[in-house]
Length: 483
Length: 95
Image 1 (cartoon, rainbow over the protein chains, first blue to last red):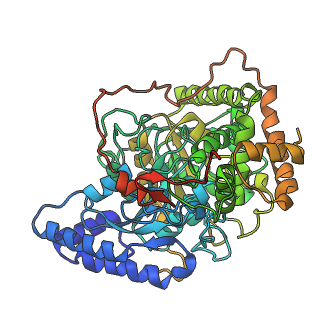
Image 2 (image 1 turned 120 degrees about the vertical axis):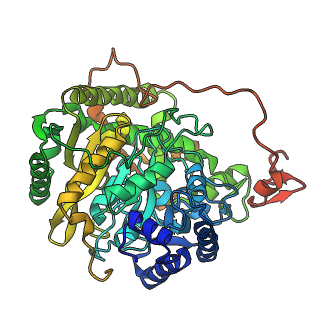
């Protein structure tokens, strides 16, 4: 059962081949057996079995919703009522959310069964899942390698068949990079497409939730549930929701694919490059036209990001004050000591680094030189994407310069870690949708192909990904030991 | 651009963020490295460019001025480290 797609599981549940309780038990058992991967921070076994029983009753009564009885897992950044929501931080280790994030509520309303909350980099700041207060997640393809981050628990859980699908969030690549490292399918939707209400904020002008699954078809089913306007999120976009599965099989003949030269420069591992070129060739066979183009501003995306993201992070994380919820230090001498020590003792070093750089960039006299300057260059990057989309339908390239690196390999040098997101960050700055899909292996580690589209072209991207998955089987490979 | 340890301590104070004295030099080094990376932006001509705040240049929506939330004080205060009679307790602020 654990190797079936969400679409297949829906059919199995509806035909009565197995019950949601049986299915949920299969995943709970696997989660128990593969605890060494450290994918889950919280397992909601009791609630899951209750929800599965309710789902079975609904299925029997012919009252099933889109995902009734399908087990899924939430990144621990999404608030879930009555369940610990830690965001990977000691700061929120004692935080039992009093409310549901809109995304959590939508999955609940669709009948999905919540298996648990997935490990992640602390407050989604990291590219390797090593900044989590709960320890690193291991990559199912290589236990000594990172799963990527920040949605590392989500990617590893889906790859290891510890959940048929999961949610992630992507501020600078946090869905796509772990999806690439773990050989799964992940999508970062257009900014504003998925509600951010109850999704713990990191950098509010960049954060976006999205689906992580084994195939484009499954990602489409999850996105259908997650997406949509939400009055509770002031940046949510009020726009009709298309049917994401309706166009999955559309023909790709005449599709114009652009390859930005800057994505294939010196930093790209040559074997990864070869897999990406092979994937692009596959699209040629499907009838696409491929052309190169140049997007020189892309190389400015890392410096722009490391002003904007920390600046917004420092503002957002100022709410953790040790007064209303979260960690409080013991015996504070006075109010300043309470703030300073609670924050100092509960935040990890990467979060501190970003709060510091963000506070500096926003401090008196520096705002124009850093934040405003970065917001201007951000527009240049965004305009460059728009010029590209005047010529081509989608852009393709690698998701990451290399395959998954080793645990501990990049922790000593934060900037080297930041540069591992070099191909993903520009998409967040522009607010565009993009996917990572499995496109082969280097050795035994997966390679991800990135597909970037214009605003609100999620359905097209899913179609492009699905057609590739009809003619390749990279997305169906199972890591050894998790069959 | 390099930051001194004193500057790091000042920034940490502004952020009300405790950092161990033994880590200050490492933060100074890391932050200086990040600022060096960011310095690449200086070369970009941006005088005529409008800063981009929302990827879709969407303005903030307004909503009708009606009550949408109910009082959940007890639920929320159940999460607080220290409360008494509906008040959040902190160390004495005024002597």
